[in-house]
Amino acid sequence: MLLDREAEPAPVRAVHLGLGGFHRAHQAWYTAADPEWGIAAYTFRSTELPAALTAQGGMYSLLVRGADDPVRTVGSLSRAHAGAEADQWLADLAAPEVAVVTLTATEAAYRVPPPGRDSAISRLVAGLRARFRASAAPITLVPCDNVPDNGAVLRSVLREAAADGDAAFAAWLEAGVLVVSTVVDRITPATTPADVRVVHELSGIRDAVPVVTEPYAEWLLAGDFPGGRPRWERAGARLVDSVDDYQRRKLWLLNGAHSLLAYAGPGRGRGTVREAMDDPVLAGLVESWWDTAARHLPLPAAELDEYRAALRRRFAAPGVEHRLRQIAVDGSQKIPARVLPVLHRERGAGRLPEAAVVVLAAWIAHFRGGDVHDPRSADLVPAARSGARAVLAALDADLASDDELIAAIDAEVPGTAGDELSGVRAGGPPPATPWQVVATDCRGCPASLA
Ligand SMILES: NC(=O)c1ccc[n+]([C@@H]2O[C@H](COP(=O)([O-])OP(=O)(O)OC[C@H]3O[C@@H](n4cnc5c(N)ncnc54)[C@H](O)[C@@H]3O)[C@@H](O)[C@H]2O)c1
Ligand SMILES: O=P(O)(O)OC[C@@H](O)[C@@H](O)[C@H](O)[C@H](O)CO
Image (tube, rainbow, N blue to C red; front, side, top):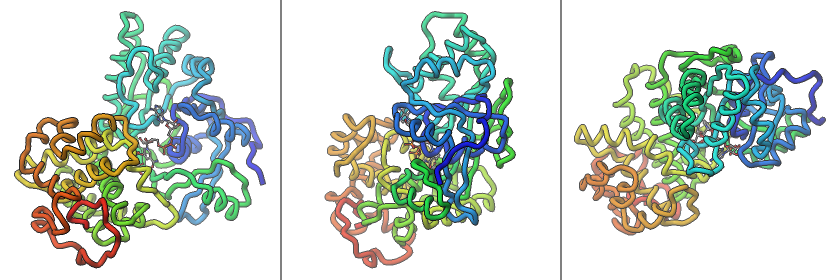
């Protein structure tokens, strides 16, 4: 059976930039709960995905691993476009009936582009300028990337990117463009050919571009929607006064653990989050990281325990094969949000947290090992050859001047500390099982994981 629409798609009242797996597992799935809202979704570059979706009438299958009825069909994408369709993009952003723009553009996109450079931000500015000229109806932007204070960051980047002396546009940008802050959560790995086959086996549907995700989904939003919005709360989204504590909880506990596993896991022969959590040493490090980060989260202990228990289940869930290589991409954009804020607080309290030391050592080993995908690889790969101080100097001057921390990280990087457990590891809680139990080839591991 091929996917196609039986009825007309909903009118386009929302636009998305960064059409990929996560948008379809999350925002488009939430929007499907309100049939009065349709989305026009744009990739950044890909032409294949919008072509495949258009051939299916914008419909796609969501394979929710672990759910009773695992294959759902989602129809909220009224149109799918390639990023190169600039005229359509400008027309959609200018349309007065469009009231919401969601964005998933990766962490790296949240910066002011050099003049003339095509980027998510330059496209947003061009679209908003078109709206200012055409209708100037207010519009709300909804950043959905794992960026701390994503609303405030997007607002400030847009303000700077749009500063070209047009005072009327600048004034409208302040008054007519609202930017909400969000916490977004639903583990959504890249789709594989095996997923395409599974969707067909389970449902009989031949979908060229399904999405695989987990049953869990969270969306917290803080901000205003003067032009209206889909009734996302029908699918469980929550409008809150502030997302700050929840943003930190998610970035530190979930994403911080992901980054730890992404860099420490491959050296222990683990390729996915589930495989890594099956390794008692890595699972013990994750617990140690959670103990450390939880100290700095002003949320009730019972709530944090429940969150951790859910993360253990989610990370170990069969079928959601989240590849560590995918998570390891762009570490320079992620480590400062996921690990360094906790490390700062710990050092302020005079502690040297072992899991933070290990993740930084493993990240340095990752830079030394090749296969690096990072917008800052030109400076960080050579820095990693020099050691922890040079890497941290590129990210955080305070931490780079912390001699005790630098020595601990350098001692963990392979080739500098031999196979013995480092002082950091020896001083921490005992691992869940003896180190020697896991007989993997640990070339490239931090010393305490070897
Ligand atoms: N996958 C998840 O589990 C998950 C969960 C929470 C948040 N997110 C956020 O969503 C983002 C996208 O994840 P995904 O799984 O959909 O990835 P994906 O690779 O499936 O899609 C990424 C989309 O972003 C676009 N993009 C990539 N680089 C860009 C750039 N520099 N500027 C503008 N657009 C760009 C791509 O063209 C593509 O349309 C992540 O970077 C993350 O911030 C993902
Ligand atoms: O999507 P990224 O690249 O920001 O980070 C990789 C994962 O940590 C991330 O996708 C999580 O799975 C997600 O944030 C869960 O909601």
